[in-house]
Image 1 (cartoon, helix red, strand yellow):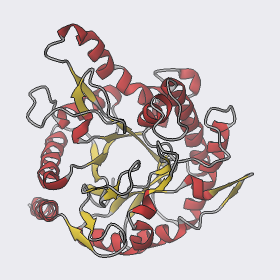
Image 2: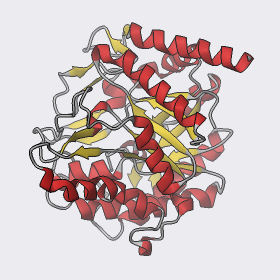
Image 3: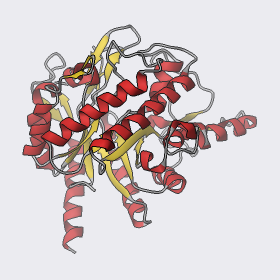
Length: 383
């Protein structure tokens, strides 16, 4: 599907964190100033596909007016470096004049999607890949259930999930009114809870989470759940799986103040392999799949990448149409709720956090794995 099996994702979250402070990760990681160099570095590594963000709060000026000047240079640089882009249109942050609880929200979002598709159609060539709403399940939990970022609600996770999916479906229709051939990548976390060893009586509750709740957003998009929203298999299109080492945990653990739950240890026998989880998604929906987000932190980045590559190879051998793996984020980044704290989880980390657009240091073990995988792919292709 893309010119390279591995893709790179540039963290593009925007919004207001749990302290009510604005954050923009495109700026915070330095990528706003270094995107040309970033794209050249990826092309040198043989990575020719990326996830990038159109920042809705910067683009939508209200009253049907849109300014895509924050997007145009990125689009041009991607074309110059032979890089294909999956464009995220709504990555948590939304304009101040938009009320996500209102009746008008879906139509306002659809108008923006229409404008974004027209801009992309006029200023780029080739296939158009779009993620209308990034991670509706996580946003519903974090922003609608736990109040961790805007709209800072609690106890309304289900309502927000439905509102986000309704908007996504109308946005997809708007995009395809411009580009009927557009491919939609619906990215959502793939999570799994494990039964506590000392509480086997909660097995039914855990299984309900693993087999029903985790899939609600995708089920709504494809029309299995709440068909009155207008979803269909064509709306779901490419299933984008966001999967980190933190996506498996023991049922019943309390989240920390930033919403994270302690994950199962790497060697916990209750951990399910990534390949088995992806196969389960394919069995459920069929069609094309992409692992749209995955990485680890610190010294575990290299081994994690190799493990993901090995699992992906097995999936492809089994006939699962996995179209790519996106290392996300590709750049180290500050935390949303405490921007002074940085997480080393990219292929490159800034030497100075105060000047993230300055010199960067690569994660050498991860870089070595990338290069090793590329050599193996070239040998395989030659044979």
